[in-house]
Length: 303
Image (tube, rainbow, N blue to C red; front, top):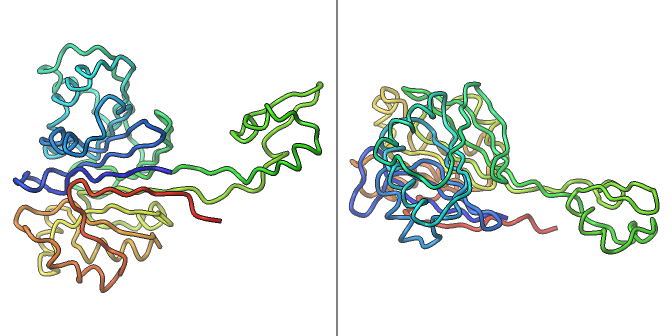
């Protein structure tokens, strides 16, 4: 189970009622942030989830509206008495970029570790989050992200009892660990059924649609994808600047068989994106307008 908060939904320019695009994910009390444009701290403060427990910050790309809020956030984390290391993920060059931004935030009470992305698809686990990154089609190197929470098979206590495994060891087996009792080694497979469907969240912004997105987003519980313009007439402009329309986001969601689509990263020239929602819903009915601090709890499917 995870909690999702779309911190901001604006692209390029923050507006009085619309902050720049950023996403916060919470799992077991720890948090992951994707993108950090100016005003991210303000909307985070309004959300009320706190700052200290952010363990991972991922960046889609290095345009200012996605990264310029980082120095202030790093200082805030330090002022929150954080001492454990922070991991920052992004396209190749992220360490150099952050080093430059840190000229105005030089002294921090914690270390920063970096993961630099180079390949078309990357897969890694950091801070308890299992992540994949997909290189997308923007004017500079840009990545979309997928976060998955796996779910083990159902625990069968009768199997554990039949094998004579003491009850204090059951919880270890449920976590996928190996135990030993009277010289016999038992694994999770001895007492668990087949793995069950977990949770999948995908986030992608600043890109043209690509063929690889179908498989990368496939089956997501929630896809958060950019809709820079609502009108199909703006396609030439979207193509020129490497962005996506509402209708294109909907086609991707439909092709990838996701459960729900939230639109985000709106142009400042589109103050009322809800006026164009039907352009997406005509293609993918379960589409919603993303709003600043829109939240969602994504639970494991009921059996």
